[in-house]
Amino acid sequence: MKNITIIGGGILGSQIAFQSAYCGFNVTIWLRSKSSIERTKPKLENLRKSYIEAIELMDKPEGKTLNNWCRGIALKDEFNKEECLKKVEEAFQNIKLELEMKKSVEDADLVIESMSEDFNAKKELYQKMSPLLPEKTILVTNSSTMLPSKLAKYTGRPTKFLALHFANSIWKNNTAEVMKHETTENKYFDEVINFAKEINMIPLPLHKEKSGYLLNSMLIPFLFSALDLLVNEISDPVSIDTAWTLGTGAPEGPFQILDTVGLKTAYDIVQMYVKIPSFLAPYNFKGMSKLLKKYIDEGKLGKSTKEGFYKYDNKGE
Image (cartoon, rainbow, N blue to C red; front, top):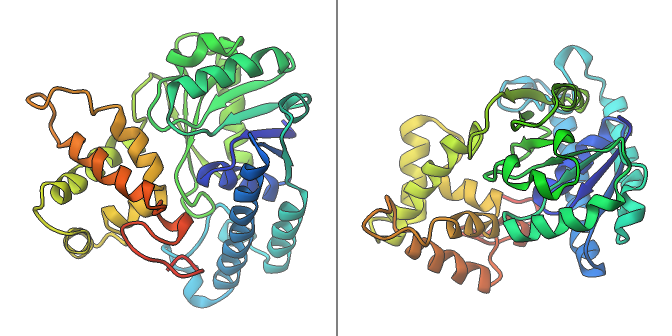
């Protein structure tokens, strides 16, 4: 693989693109509109700054601790500050932003779909993109909840389709969950695992489909529990986060994580559960939906807009 196309320039889409370019791949991001391009450019600029800050820290004694070392940037015994900084600049300069779908995928070895958690939107995208893809192209979804088998028939290449899901801040949290479905050929499963290694990820293979994969099977119920405490007026975000961070030693609480993931993504996931009858629902999903919608309508999407459950400065602090 050499030519990688990312579908969507959101939080994770832009991160996957930057990390792939940093590791020497030719990267194109396909975007729906000129306004999407204008929203993606600042994300790439912020990633450039984040990588540079991480590299500068990694060059200091305090940066060599487990919590501060960014494994996606370099292994400790392979770290060279100047080489890493050079790779950051090359990645930033070489990522292409493209509006024409045919042009964006015409020579792609791998296409990574990283759109919002909207089944119909993904379905329509695959149906539109399918006839444009070269025979060689492997297609993966970065969906955090949807099973690839539910989308495979719309791709035109079910044997070459599977899931590749990343954790947020992938230059530091360098895991990649690789999940196949029943008709995925093993050779393509293995190729995607190898690609994950080539962009400095630790591949985590899933041999059976599981909604939520590994990370989100544990993370989503955790975030639901926190939101449930808030919408039922049990407590406030700061107190809930403090209970978690001080009680477990974790660096971030659930509402800090939600701001990083993005409240639009959280809302899309909650919408999948809203129609569960209240007497069967384990959480107050309707209350969560109403609360998140209010934040979204006010433009408070999390760190990407400098305000969500918390307010942030230009450094995202």
